[in-house]
Amino acid sequence: MEERGANRTLRFVAICLGALMIVVATATPAGLLGGASADRPATEDYLSGQKQTGEAAARPPKRDGYSFLLSSDEHVYPARWCAQTTIGYTVDFSQTASVGLDQAQELLRWEQVFNKWNRASRGAYSFEYLGEKRLPTVSKNSGREIDIDQIGSGSIGITYVYGDENLSAPTDYRASAVNGRTAGNGGLQVVSRGDGPAALVGDRGFIMIDAEDALSLTPDGLRKTLYLHESGHALGLGHVDDPNSLMHGTLSESRLGVGPGDLTGINELASLPCTQ
Ligand SMILES: [Zn+2]
Image (cartoon, rainbow, N blue to C red; front, side, top):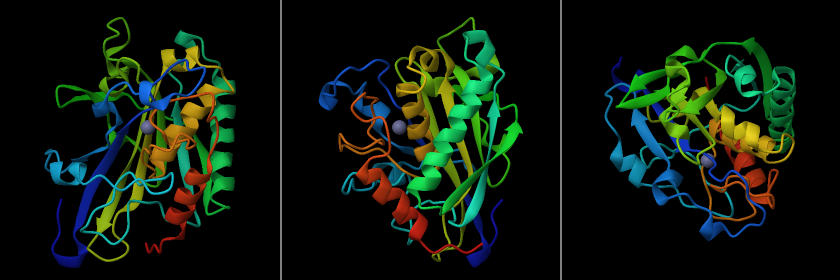
């Protein structure tokens, strides 16, 4: 629904295809990308259902090891969550047991991941686990995608899914975005309140984890890195070329945690003015 003038509300979702490589011993980034298209953020207008090719093409500059998932010449600031607020998160564990992931350990891992982002942002972002919540995928655009409307306002929805080439998996937990070697997908829906500085304020985040790929990753090594990377997208960070940054488009043992560029990026997002 669209209102007039400065009060109009537009909704975007910024989707950035996830971390790619499953097992990587040493980093040679140029050889690790699964394909240029998988590394490119895209935006989609949920109201019109049309791809916003102009914004997708206007890829943000990759400055100093960080970039933003969604920024636009039409807005003063990039998509971000308001700092000094608590962001809730829910987890759909319905597919963990069937692949052999321990639910309690997985929850602990997510708590550790969000604690890392809390510290990285110097306390600007706080996180609170809101409990389990089902988050199946929906059929859309000739594939299966996250259903952003099932995520509560002000929170991040996490769900474990399968690539949609896995025909033995439950249909409503298949996701096109994690096909092949893509292990995760994360993004952010923002609400735009006119053209002022408050535009593009985070409203809902999402994280899809390929359950089978997650199982194949060292639990407190690359698996946690995958979760950190995808939650970085849900907080508004985009991919970078810097091989030292967590937000590089591939997984590598040589960058397991938040790097200097990631720190700069998250703190820049957290420093932007934000009114609700
Ligand atoms: Zn990514």
